[in-house]
Length: 352
Ligand SMILES: C[S@@+](CC[C@H](N)C(=O)[O-])C[C@H]1O[C@@H](n2cnc3c(N)ncnc32)[C@H](O)[C@@H]1O
Image 1: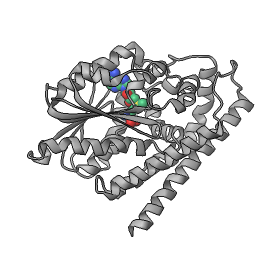
Image 2 (image 1 turned 30 degrees about the horizontal axis):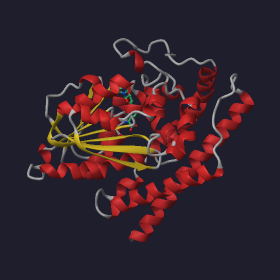
Image 3 (image 1 turned 180 degrees about the vertical axis):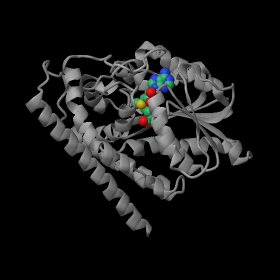
């Protein structure tokens, strides 16, 4: 396919995901008001047309950046079209079936509600939450099956485009180890969830040794399933707390973490950063992707205020004003840069 055709195909693909996400959210909020209106009026900010325009422009920009990164060879263009279609079709009805339970739990302000049979022993208390009112939090296979679909809907089909923004700084950071054979390069994804970031890293760097860790056995099972579809070596996945990483000091040349920090209390954020520093080899790179923050996106503040009001996100508000650069410096990282794309922010930090 010519570049123009591929670009057009990618733009249409993104537009259709965006329309799908918007349509789902509109129908679902209309049904909510009809069938199960919130008992307590949600205190959310209205989104004015100027802000809507800004959101659309940000979305257009990230799609353009995603395309440009593929064009300049950071990763193959095929990654732009990667989508778990089978899961999307298979679990979309389950998403609707789960919706009334979610509304009920939200209405009753039940935030630590787990089905009988879900093992909750041994997890930190901050983790035992129905984040985003998710049924069984992160602790069931169904939660893992629905997660990617839910996140794509939330971000109007751009969740993967946001994840892919860690790829360019990771690849750049790994250049410090160009003298090593690719197989000796080790990259860890902290809180890998269902494995989408690892899948993209594998697509960009087919030879490097990949590692993923997460607290959720169910999400790791899902990641294992997704990553097994790829030819080549399987990433090593392990269940652990990111506050206490089960790896040797200086083991990895590159470390990433996507959408974790806003779900951690402040002290845990610092512990994870310190652990990332410990396991990164001197000269290595640590790339964080998470939500935008107040300091660089003040115009997006109404959205940042609405998010924890609509979804159960107990640590998000603190996160939006938390200075992660300061935390990274405190852990020992240097040469720290930040970027913003659509609804996400990135920190690229180096271990001296
Ligand atoms: C919002 S999800 C992000 C998952 C994935 N990185 C992505 O891009 O979709 C947050 C993930 O962090 C994991 N998590 C939360 N706290 C953790 C901790 N202390 N240690 C390890 N994983 C944790 C959860 O199990 C979940 O998979």
